Structure formats: structure tokens, C-alpha cells
Image 1 (cartoon, rainbow, N blue to C red):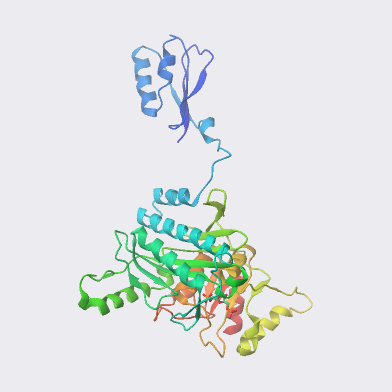
Image 2 (cartoon, rainbow, N blue to C red):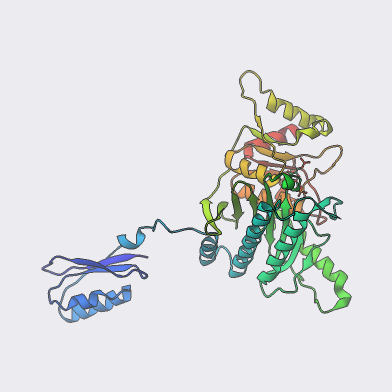
Length: 417
Ligand code: FBP
């Protein structure tokens, strides 16, 4: 704590205040009765002050100590930047996260910076279009899906702090040989909103971090336990969202913004292209409790059940008193959810006659986003229960999602009840 202290004597003369040592941010006043004191004044710490006090007392000088914040060090430099790295260190220093998790989150921010530049240059570096392969869900993989997956996986591996990683683009979770300590379990969707990639419309990466459970790491040198190893990985990844330690997304849009929570609120960091650093721009985001914006793919309206159709009709025809809701749909969960976080409203991907459980994956999309929504005072539901309470049965399980302002999510739950 910055402070300064007074040495008051019976015949005070003009005190001189000088910062003893900016880095220890202590300054103090000395009254020069005997002239010699000024040399002592350069000392810095509280302990110094006390020893000076003792010496003065020994010289028969009556002195008292008053501590007050020093004005010099409190003044923030206009060039002071609160970067993500600095913010993570502060969380670590205050014991919110440990050193291992700091490193995992830093490696994720590096992956997002790399993916941001790949997405921005996709058209130039021939990274648009399909890869010519399909993922475990039978979807055509975009070139950038595959590249982003590689970037994300390699950043997590080289952090040496992840035990198991599970990607939306990979069939099964994998144990990380390079694991050094921490052994965190990281689930991620390397590039969400792939239908928007080639049109350079908002996309994003989503991640969630869990603590490893018992028997996390099978003995990698022991071939016979490969099935056991795979089972262990799947078991460790299939945790309910309520076990999440941290989650976040990085949106690639007109700005590149990383939004994350380590369980103490939600904070947003904008990538400053000048420094290549994520800088704190949205501290402690709170989702408005209600909002007149809905974000659904109404193209599926005819496939919805009647209760949901009634809900949607009422949103658009609120009657004489009300104002109709506005429709906003980017077709990228990260973009639509980011807007909902800031402006309020609701994003929904319901089940329909074609996709009985909707389209979104519980582990890589619904649970991390619901963790953020709740940390920001909002809600994430499958229409009947809290998404974070759903215990995954498979790693690529899909669930319906209604997420955003608490009152809006509770409204749709009432219609579906
Ligand atoms: P991907 O992870 O395959 O991109 O799918 C998720 C997603 O793209 C969401 O980001 C988006 O909200 C939704 O699917 C769009 O689906 P649809 O085109 O059916 O509306």
C-alpha cells in the first residue's frame, strides 16, 4: 500500500515531501531540526521509518508516525494498459486461479490471436471453402475448421498444463503426452459459425476448462490400456457444466474480443492490433434482466412444436400495449450471444422435427455459454432445466438451448411448460 508518513516534532519547520522510492511507493516528510535528517529521508519502507523513529527517540526527539496514501503512486499513467496477461496474474495473485490455469488461459489467448489473423486473411491465403473431409457429425469441414483445430490443439499441448483436450472437430478426446502439470481438461469449438466463414461474417472460438477427475491420465506407455485410456478421457470430459472452472469465447468480427469468466463475473478483452495484446474493455459484464431482441433461425418455424410457435407469434404480436420484439440472427452462436450479453434479449436453438435435440453441442457450445450467461446474471436453459445441470452422456451430445436475459429465458420456459 502506498503511504507517506509524518515525523512531527515540537517545532515543525517547512516539511519536505519526497517520494522515497516510486517502486515501493512510500514517501515521507522530515523536519530538519538537526539538518542531518534529510539523508535518512531517502529510506523507503515502513520498517525503515520505524527504525528512523527509534533512532530519533534515542536522540530524544519526540516523533509520531502518520500513514496516508501517497498521491504520487496512486495516479494511473495514461499509458497503463490492463492486458489479459496482467489481469490473469492478478487473478492468480488473489488466489482465484492457480499458476497452471493462468498458463492454460494464456495459451488459449495465443491460439485465438492466431485464428483471428487466419480468419482475417482467409480470402488472401486461400483458406476459404471446404477441406473435403467430414467431421464426426458428418458435417463438411471447412479448411479453417481444420486449421483452427490444429492451432488450438497445439497451443494447448505446448502449454504443458492440459491433461485431456476435446474438440468439436475430433471424434474422441485425447490425452496430452506433453502434460507437465495441472492436467486441466479443456473442451473447445475451434471455429464456431462455420456457415459464415467464407462470407467473412462473425465467427468465434468457444472453450471450457474442467479440473481433471480421478484416474485422469492412463499410463500412456502401457498399450493394453488404450481402450481404458480412451474411456478415461471420455469420462473426464463428460462432466456437467456446473463443474466448469473457467469458460469463454473469442469473437472474430469488426473487433476481436475475448470474453471469459474464471468464476468471478465475466470480463471482455479487445485485441489491440497495435500491440497484439488483449486489453480489458468490458469489465464485469452484466446481461440486462430483459431485452426485446430475439435471435432464432425462424426458417425452422414450421418444424417447431406448437408451444414454441405460440411463443414466437406472441413475441411478434404483443397486442395494443406492447412493442414487438426485434429479430436479430447472425447465424453464429458467438456473435448472437455476444450481442445478447451486451444488449439483453434471448438466443435460442430449439429442437425441431428434423433435429430432435436441436443443433448445438452441450460440451463445446451450450455449457460454456451457459456458464458465462449465469456469471453475467443471465440464464441458460434447454427449455425445462438449467443447462449446467445436464450430465453429458456422449462427448458430441446435442441439447436445445435458450440463453440470455433471465426474464426472457423464463418467459419461453413458461410457454414450453
Ligand atoms: P458450427 O459449430 O458447426 O458452426 O454450428 C453451430 C452454429 O453455426 C452456431 O454458431 C449457429 O448459431 C448455428 O449453428 C446456426 O445454425 P443454422 O444455420 O441452422 O441456423
